[in-house]
Amino acid sequence: MASSRSRWLSSLLVIALLAVAGGAWWHFRDYFQPPPAQRLPLDGCDLQKQACRRALPGGGTLEFSITPRPIPLVAPLKLRVRLEGVEARRVEVDFAGLNMNMGYNRPRLKRAGAGVFEGEGYLPVCIRRHMEWEAQVLLYLRHRVLAVPFRFDTYKN
Image (cartoon, rainbow, N blue to C red; front, side, top):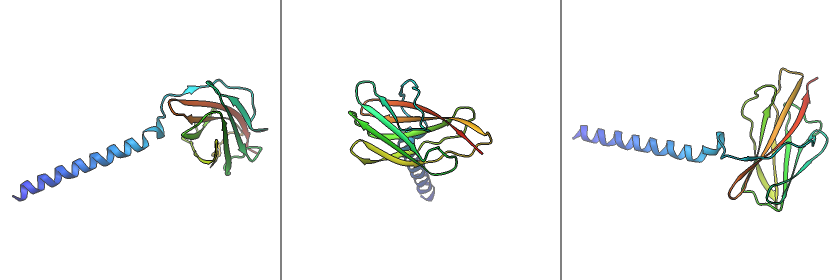
């Protein structure tokens, strides 16, 4: 009788662990591998000097800014995305070092009003004096994901 109960409890524990693991995978499935995105081409806008505005395929516009300027390393950055003519469920900014892998750095912005998403991020310190970065704004729309890239450079004194 005790052996039967022990097997039953073991089976219940395995099922519970599988349910927790499945729930965690479902919750974080887009965290490291976002759904396939339509990547827009780069343009010449410099985030170090101004907010950048882009037309989106299918209509609408995106305006993205990072402050303070010049964009510092290892300091809080204010990230702001303003959308017109398009509704996003979620907005993230994926920072990537172009001349050195700087690890995963993708803050999720919070809705701050109609079409406005804001949040904080930071750029890690790098051993290189000059670093090239890409900030890719990920727009999670109703039936697709748009990836809108912006590039900028930082200089360490």
